Image (cartoon, rainbow, N blue to C red; front, top):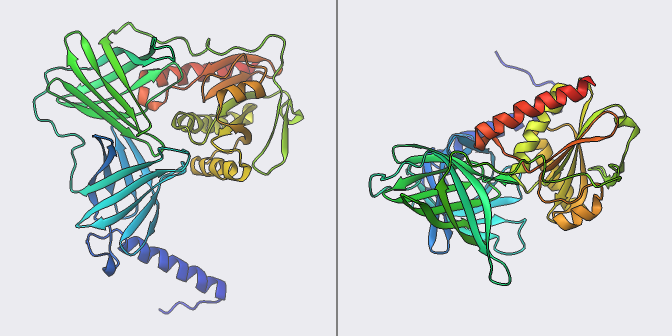
Amino acid sequence: MIQIIKSKAELLNNLKTLAVFILASFIFMGCNDSKEGKFLKTGNWKLVFSIGAEELPVLLSVTDTAIYIINGLEKIKVDEFEFLEDSIIIKLPVYDTEIRAKLENGNLYGNWYNYTRSSFGIIPVTAFYGLDKRFIAVQEPLFDISGKWEIDFISQDDSGNVKLRKALGVFSQEGAKVTGSILTPTGDYRFLEGIVDGKEVKLSSFNGASVYLFTANISEDGFQGMYYSGIHHQQQWQGKRNEQFKLPDSDTLTRQAIDIPVAFSFPGLDGELFQYPNPEYNGKVVILQLMGSWCPNCLDESLLFSQWHKKYKSDGLEVIALAFENTDDFQKSKQSVERLKNRIEANYTFLIAGKSDKQQASEMLPFLDKVMAFPTTVFIDKQGKVRKIHTGFSGPATGAAYEEFVTETIGFLEGLLKE
């Protein structure tokens, strides 16, 4: 039977649908000759960042319609591409970063561009087809690092004095393969994956916004090695087993300034000024979120808050996000925040609060004694009183810490909503 197209609009819609189908069918087909309209082979790829003398590997999985970044238990879906004659532009989700690479002899050669950085924002990358090992082990593992580790990140101040920044490592090892995360008082390094090769541990992660590499030599006393964050930062780190080690309570690190009520005024994504206190929020429980679209921990937190907002909005819960971005340009900040908001389908209020500078944020929010981390979350009851301030965020990669936070905070919120 022949279907009759009744209108020009219907014809255009059918043509658009056909074009999308053809594009999805051909751009990922397995062939090295881009002139034939075929590009990336489906299957496993190994993406390698060149960090000075070090290589930082990450695994990719390419399907007919998307690329997935693999970090342990995490799979990040990437579905925005632009194909040129012999090149591909891969736009990373949420963040203002992308990979630009050319196809040569079946592999990709190019750079990762982080446009949120004014310097050190370009890192060379190579992607190899058919490789499914993140790191190659030369020896059998001589240690099992499963469990909790008390970690020190080592630096020096301007006077040459050694400074130690405490962290908690939580790892799981099966054979040579290691997964886990590292928690700090203000956040976590998200999903890490790697191996123990003889006496050496190697861990890496790429979340679209940041690239991390951890290497260390293990002994009976612990481990010592180097930590790399992109090409802009590296420092020594060390650790020792300590199942009893705990970080400071995140609910005690930031406090409300004495006798200063919560009040602020910032533009929304529509450019209109939003003021708090606000009559529309009277009698509501409010989660006030200090965040940034550039911040992976903030993204993890925003996903959770979006779920809570949808579930408890009818009971009187509201969420207000104060976005501190990497630019003074309102339009650029708005675009970045809208990209995050739309990607995670968050329906709560987002305001553009300023630049991602903790000192400036502290001055703009005098009701807090300080802003020491993005994210920071202020829980406000129906009477407009601050009931709790939580600094940082331990996301899904931290396992038990995340689950504990979710359980405790849901109970706390439900209590506030019943008051």
